[in-house]
Amino acid sequence: MSKLELRLDPDVIIIDKFLISDLMELRLIEENSRDISIELWINSEPFMEIKSLIVYEDFPVPGFIVEKIMAILDINEFDPISRTEDIDFWLYCAILKEWVDNDYKIGFISLDWCTQLLWELAGIGDKKAVNVMNQLITCMKTN
Image (tube, rainbow, N blue to C red; front, side):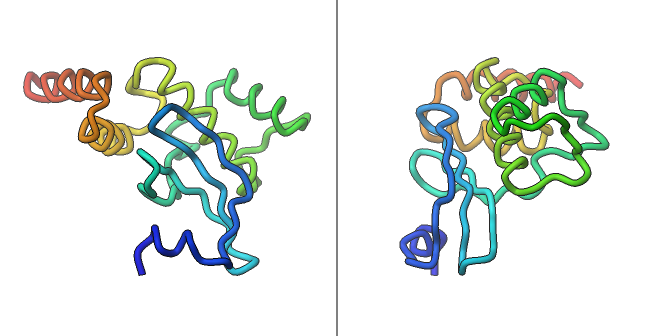
């Protein structure tokens, strides 16, 4: 069964979703009344389940992102160690939205994720992604 077919399953509930751009959407999904996952959809199709977009030890979350998350969830403290799927969902939303709003700036997300997302977005005709991907390739060739 494909991921798209699975989304038609009545045991799958979209708990929350956030439109990052015209082409990207993040969904907080509950399956079988217990399994919670975060999925990135590109061009209205499931792209991947997010498990490790952010590695906290290698990529500290910028303070302004933490402030946005705390305001959205109405919490007083942010503890990256004991976070929930709900906090992760909004954290990913804020970071991906910031990445898109800053013209796919490398550094907001890991290079692996950045490359995968740029490749997918460029493949569906996102001109900004094509330009950034070309810059990235040029930079890699010169190093």
